[in-house]
Image (cartoon, rainbow, N blue to C red; front, side, top):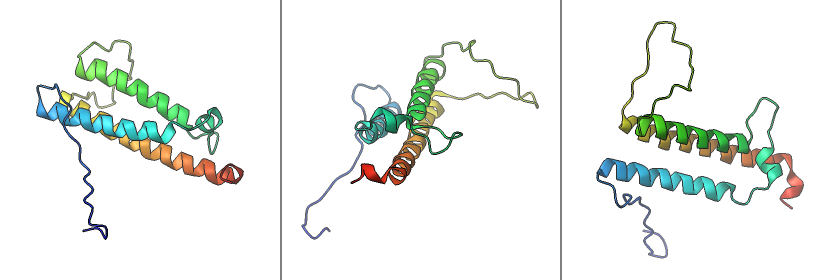
Length: 136
């Protein structure tokens, strides 16, 4: 128990309106991580969004663009089942190909967003370290 005796609850409630409990939880998880990402980037200015620690690094803007494109693509192809003829990937050398189900797509969307959220947090700290005058 905390010194103040206050109980602080942290939980994720299933997204209402879903027929599937699994989908309801994954959508709630996705909304939670997306909310964290929005909160982490809301106050950033264009310079901060475009800054890269090195020429071969991603910027926060690049990561946000990537996340948005992956969400759209995975939603269209993985969830709605739309054909993805516009995606041209070379065949794997061993001739194998990937098959996934909708549960994996939902898992991947949450996992992918959370991983890039971590990268955004690191880039924010690196920007602050490279621009100490901005902290003052």
